[in-house]
Length: 219
Image (tube, rainbow, N blue to C red; front, side, top):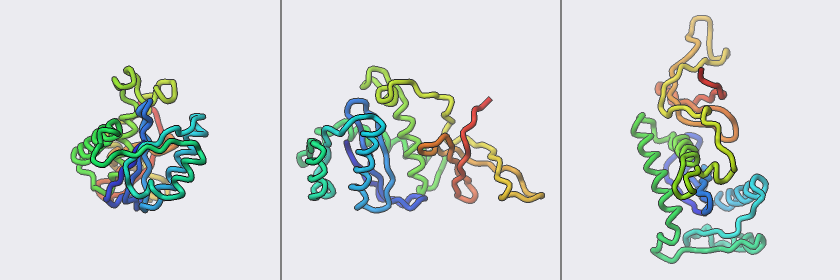
């Protein structure tokens, strides 16, 4: 497991993010947070997700020596759940090499995405969620040519759901946003996917607003 923080304001008010990686499947989980102290709450949410969705427990938690891991309530939670708490030695990032390489890979992808379509930095959260979603479904030599998603869930994802990042689409607007003389659609740039639902997120380059559209199959 690993965490990272990014000091940039995000469209929804988040300034930081936390990421966790499974050492066996290399699957990546990502959470946006508004405040630094929310980390413990997010960890408990993630721990519950692992238990309910994957019928598993976190046997070992590896992290750096950051202060958020040294609190008494964190130690108490590890003891309660019989979780081994491993910390890195100072200036020895190679002890958590998988997480560091994964983090570098994701940041490079996000920077490329943002530069490619000139998206305002406030949308970094949307872009990084898209990058992580794609990386989790790409075949990897580390997981014997399976994607992290296949390794974790045991089946192949339906790739028809994916769209080309930064493509422009004409989105049909809701009736409440239109009048008799106005346009029924606008041009939007595809940014990514909604969490937990089959939906798409688009960016209006004029108004700088996000638009959510339901999942549909292209013909």
